[in-house]
Length: 422
Ligand code: GDP
Ligand code: IMO
Ligand code: MG
Image 1: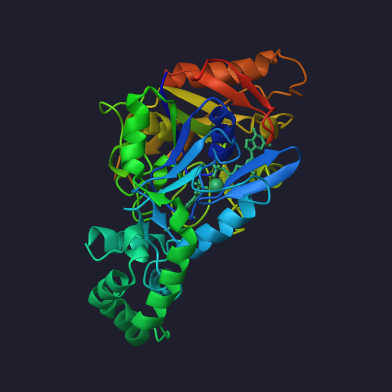
Image 2: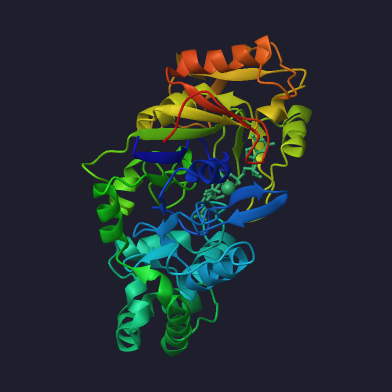
């Protein structure tokens, strides 16, 4: 296995950071290919918590080159703040962190527009407020700024002069918000560009070259399948392709393939922000999972909505990304509960569907549940209880792909491998 992708198979926060960090031990490159600092990937090392938003989760391994590829949207100020925070743990320089010169930039206007739309717009998505959507809009609209533009002041001023007027007009006339001028934004971004210069380079070329030389590459996805702009619960989605397709447009592969596509899957389901969620629990069971699982957003501090494992959504996630195996996380949170359920189908107008579909109105589906025997494992030995084994077997039988990793705690060590990776 030379290449491996980490994909969120639900609505994000499945434990991608922890699994990426763990598998990075054997990788040469770790590549972020979509999303931006809307992500919050938590890693616990020796009792210390590190939350990464934009810097790839391979950064804690000195032998790894962490790459922010061209499919990402990068907010330079947040990026440098994060780099300096990571430097408290490990040296970070142009040798272990590389940003593509073609990566799209998030400007002050993007952040202001994101916040204004959430507060005053017609549809509230519950975004992270980081300017992700507006920046991707400009990229697709061919008005965007790229990291390379930050390094040439004249080019930066010219590019902003050509493209900023609509955004300033929108902020000041529609939302009544004072926007920075082109000159102010040029100065701010130019200064930031100078501080991040050492990281900027030809990420695509270096990645291709590494692949040809047989280096092991881990692609680190952000968000989750149901937040994908094409496959997710539109419009309650993020603005990038969070599924495996995003790897091909956002970073690049060798011969169009990724050897292993690992779907990170929480043993239950969570969602943060607005939008439909078929298995959401509104009772004390949901509250118990939220509290015990410490389900609080790593980026915004919002409480995550909680519910049972959703097999129709997972069958769909497997189709969307051609997932080859699953890492099941947070099994410890379900351990010791009095009830254990999984959703095995969606009832819509009297008909039962076993797989979610794009455009299916998940707000209208009624989950069909199967009750299972609860398990009570302390994970102290290698042996799993019959009940937990049955839970994992059911998932493997229903999803028809192996559960290659079972995780039972936030730390690097709290994991059981059932399959080899890398
Ligand atoms: P990501 O966005 O997919 O990287 O996930 P987050 O970091 O946002 O959220 C996952 C949370 O669960 C983090 O606080 C992790 O430290 C924690 N976590 C990951 N795996 C496990 C596990 O198996 N058990 C427990 N209890 N916590 C876990
Ligand atoms: P990680 O990588 C969970 C959600 C937001 C909102 C929607 C759109 O940590 O799993 P955006 O700011 O992207 O325009 O918000 O997407 N969202 C996430 N939810 N985990 C994430 O990332 C998320 N990134 C965005 O809450 O509902
Ligand atoms: Mg997260």
